Figure 1 (cartoon, rainbow, N blue to C red):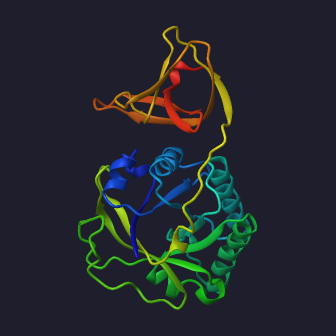
Figure 2 (spheres, rainbow, N blue to C red):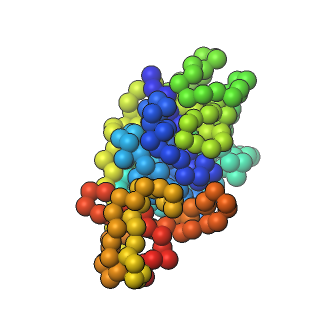
Figure 3 (tube, one colour):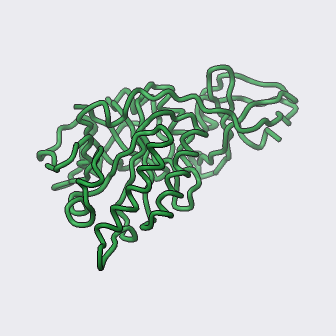
Length: 288
């Protein structure tokens, strides 16, 4: 049994070194948003977990309740994973939004069909597939036996403030299918993360599949356009350690952008830069 977290842009930019030191054994990262674009913290979280050798899987929060819509979201999740070098992991299908809950004639069958459409696309792409939902959705809105596969169930109980590694104060939910993971608290406290974060238990290695190989491919090139050059930092923050300084005119392989806010509330955009085997961060205003 392993203890870990699931996380998205709402948690900002965690200090993954502190998170790992606190005992985080795995992380489930949100990969895409409602509009199907990558979660704004996905690249940062992928790199942080890779640097600390934290096993990952990913999830997408689902709004679609048709087979066509579900397949489209599944393809977008796969695209985001491949673009960021997340290979062969489980993609968790997060069905908790009310828009997914079908009612009326054959409601269960239609909801189940949309999930199976996503499962087909994801498995054919070489990724694992699993369903995340709460216990009520599992029993009341779908045909879980027909879907089969892996399940990650949310069941909180008192939902008290809990620190990472602290044992749940209740037993895991019982389901008919394979229970790979249990989200037992939404008020978790973890060093390196500001505010609350969901806490999870993984019952076997299949929850994160394997220690995922993360090797993102640069998407384009940019040139340093600052006479004094540019500092490449360990994290997207002006307060982070400078790992390397590059010269004006140097051409860099880059991945994407994030926006970080400093201690006085000023927002600065940073770009993820590949240097050898490392991914570093540079203020975007220094590149063109």
